Amino acid sequence: MKKSKKKLGDPSDSLIIDVPQGGQVIRYFNLKPALATPIGPGDWIFAERGTTTDISSLTVTFPDNQSALERELERAVLVISIEQDEQAGGTWRFALGGVATDQQDEDPNNDIVLDIIDNGFGMLVYIHALQDSYESVPFGFVASFTDATTGVVSIYESQDPSVIITRPR
Image (cartoon, rainbow, N blue to C red; front, side):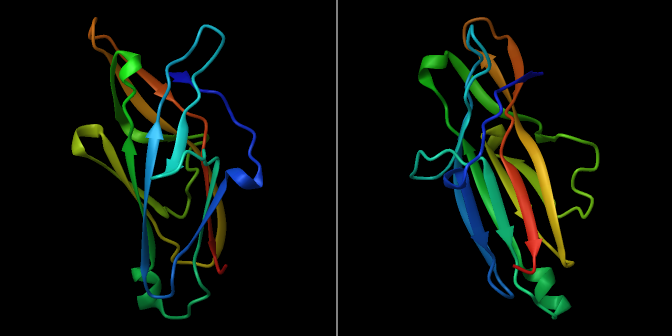
């Protein structure tokens, strides 16, 4: 598996999503993978739909909520679409579950659930926080690239973003 470069995060690279009490929030993102270059890994861009600002850190916050029923219903849903680069000469799709964490059991509270949709061109990410906690989950997106000429499939992994889940805010 080929890895892309690790970006240094700064506050402008961060996005905070506040989940409302007893509710959910749905946000849309684009992921633009990049092939490796002769001098190093490609620069993947993860951005909210309609922007080009690369996100290296995503924080999802949940309110201080005493109702167990409302906690069950509170979630963030991330809808991520892979952007194709016509210049690349092939097709990108999410592969091998769509993400890889840096360590085993990186999400011990099992707060993140993924579904690959649209024949690998999209991913749904469900983020919950049933208990009071602060959890940082570093991961990379995993995607395959199928060369249009040769049919060769290569697997690549990005090195960001990290996801921070916190309850209470």
